[in-house]
Image 1: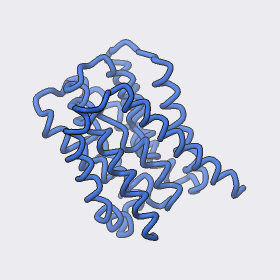
Image 2: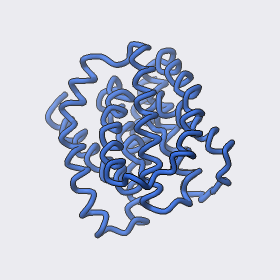
Image 3: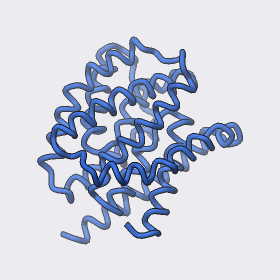
Image 4: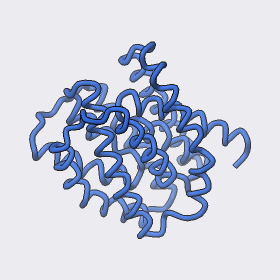
Length: 240
């Protein structure tokens, strides 16, 4: 990894961590396409490891606000999703996994922009958790299904509930990926190198989110995600 690539990944992780702390998800959506462009072996494992640390920090910050009952049903749904996602990582060639990451990002942005709001029922939370398990394990982008089903929750409750789900869910995904042989020394080394950027993003999120308009911040984040996904698609298509 060159110095320029390291700087790009660090910046991406920092911006993603700010968004994750602010709205409860976003690190995977922004980081996964960029990581896949720089080094396909870094996604999803390194992104999931970094996201687990950031979500743990959010959960500590917003402690007591999480909807643990709803989170429980989502985690039940995530179990079969994690198994399916781990199979995709093992079976799909890197090129197609990268295209899957791009497709998940673009679909998540499109659904978010459309403003679809499902009714919060046990069945809808379970299905969202299953979809998040597949997407999160295979691509490290498990936020869109949960953000869609929980979007009516208040700010602190949304962040805490999403963080509780993603901390437990990320650990489940990492266990499955480890069993599949996708967590090695290379991924752990890169995670350690990029961890300071994640810490910086968490520390900056507090003062920044008080100054920035949440709607515009989310719009900018979605634009960055689309740009990263489009670049990833262009790179992969050029190699066919």
